[in-house]
Image (cartoon, rainbow, N blue to C red; front, side, top):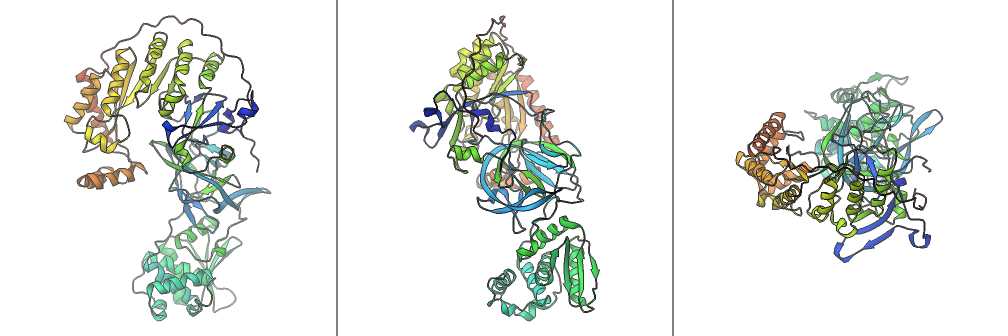
Length: 637
């Protein structure tokens, strides 16, 4: 399949001056960075615009490093159910290369379901957005993920320069998938009863090992160990799980789905009543018909493909050929208009795939896949651990910054760095890209700021001072608390809070304004008046220009990790956290307001924001001329 659109990797190329040497990216392994491989690439652009829907106070960023080897951010939350070729669903995190799933193709005037293959699968961590549709469907994706709407492909977030989801944008598909049955004893009893009532001879299980329904029945019989007389008897009490199993069994025995019609024949009034009452209990509309053979009635499910898929997923019949939807047109009356798109406010583990059709079905809607596979193969990366261990280094970042700042169209807007990947990560100790970037910003008197957790920024303090003489320069560090023991438990592997505040103090002493993001504040752990006072006092002593309080967010991924830590280290707090957060990700608004007000009160008490050490900006001299064009190889994709 060919793709003619613009890829994120189109912005990366190799130096074409020496094809014998730079025919491939330069790959470097060094003893001091054990377990990490650097891939040195010449980029085509470096100043990137932030999506308009992002809740950040800046528009432009520079990222000289990428921790993600394929440079793709089209990702979905790991629990997102994907429609498999057998009609079932599987979380995207559990997919594997070679899995058969459903994609779509346009055939004639209709887009239709077709079976395709997973060609690549990977994991990364990205800022998350929640998309809610009017029918109740929810999806969690990165801002650059794309879904198919009735007006074409749309990004989750964006600006006027690219098509993105808006309120009432209508997605294409059937709507959210139903959860599968629990496959417990009640379900198994119900399934076997359905098979028997449908006329299946369970004695043939052993002689027909290849038959999916009989194979399942044999397993259930061995597991339950009860006689057939008990299985065919109607239970005194029918649970929802029994009803799901019964419908799956009777469908495997007698049912069919073809020509857009799902039918379940029945042989007697008791069976008919069991079918219809189970459908009603599970929320399915149905009609009962009596064809020309008076001894056989038929229950039909209206509602089209959306209801048929809900039936398959909720009941899980064993015979996959009866669940086949290949070639069926994507037509649905589901209310798939966008009700809301909101930033969740936290980075979460996300996953994406490459498929043979270029798309797949994510929780009932058509989702664009990522085309990073070609570049991934080109770089000889695998699709798993490379995302943590393969670092792409834009070795020409400083010269690109200088060139783009000199372009007539550049308006001198503020540029934020460290917002995606820490520009002072360990790789910067080897490649030293930031000095050249800061020099270019200094020479063009372009305002900028840097967010970091480390101390390597102090290496470039002289350059920052020079830049601050000519333009606005700012920095920020994150410090949620100052308790050393808690830091060792919660944030192992990061610089200590006091070390980060030392960085803040040093920057301030040299006239570089530095704010502090006071987060995460941990309820019942770091939110007592004494702890808040201690943290804000230390922040004030460091000379921070501002402080902003952020309470702990417990979105999927972070929630599981943190609650597991609580159970192991502070079990007495598990119940209070469950009461405080409930099923949500955020603390109640009154808690956040209370904490923010207390921190603001302490900030005023200790004079944060009241002391200024402004530099007098000198008039900038003309910047050095931008270097001439560099010969570049064609883009990798």
